[in-house]
Image (cartoon, rainbow, N blue to C red; front, side):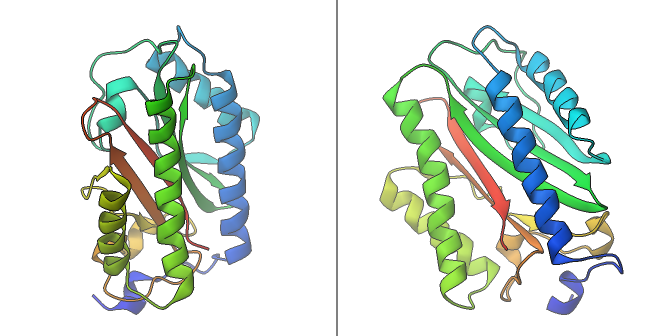
Length: 219
């Protein structure tokens, strides 16, 4: 499949609308994160997330809302959580939201901590820092999507974390992007143009049973 086909969009697509959808997704994540507290179960946090999205008048969900607590932060998108854990006083969790505003797909994810455990805080910060390094690489030159994930893996190792290469980013567009069959960003052998791809970063602590996640639109 050609790069042009993999970056195809619908007639309604606009970069401004993509950026609006992304901004709304980040607003929803921030609202939800502020309401998640120790003692809450994962299922309760997900239900709360649905209320937050409704408050912000999202049009629809385009991928299931994920909230992962503790060891479930190591799970990939397609894996089920183990049980229904309760968030601890010194814990880690991430939120992954995909919703539609103005007919365009927002998708973002971020990791948060409770308490003041330095290792968990460092893990959460590292996922965002690694995302920013890879994003900067994309901004500096016309490199391929595949190169970005090779670079991400090398940078993760240098930072002392393990990158989950089962998570390699994906297309977004005016809804639904799936009709364009863009595949994973990490398998895209061309330069990924702005406003079309989500860069996903998921890392694992080298020895402890938790990880962190961060994703955003390359725009």
